[in-house]
Length: 109
Length: 122
Image (tube, rainbow over all chains, first blue to last red; front, top):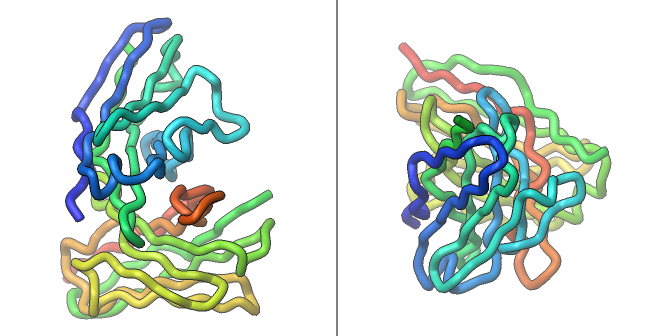
């Protein structure tokens, strides 16, 4: 159960779009449409942003979107805002277990 | 509203055990599983295991097998996570999270508890 691979950091200016990748294997990301994304501000609990690859829970801004191609899932944040500065983690279901990504720090320049 | 409230911070000595609680409200407790996730200082999220609040079935991460036990008390809608033989690298914030899903497998975590800091130090 190795962690999914994410870039350590991604940055962008306000109003820009950024994309965070999450790479796994055919046993996890590639094998199921069960990828979710979480936002975590410092000292806070993670918050669900995207579930089942591309679905947004009620209350989450439509500036957040998710997709998947093969063994790589992606989270795109459009119209970047200061409050989007946080850590982001992907997660995938894999045969009765769950695995998280290594995490990406998003910086708003 | 759906809420998970965890017990307070703990300080333990190496070799001891810790038991963290997670009280659920705002939904039918037995209709969802609970997962436990931990985060060491400055590190990422690590999935520890899952328990069905319906029948008590469990699945634990391989690296914690034999040291962790997850249980539930349906009369109080509370989940528990006990970790034994504590080591310094078990120092972390421990979160509980409700496991949700529509299809064949529950697969996302929402909401999360506020976290419980467990410090292991001599």
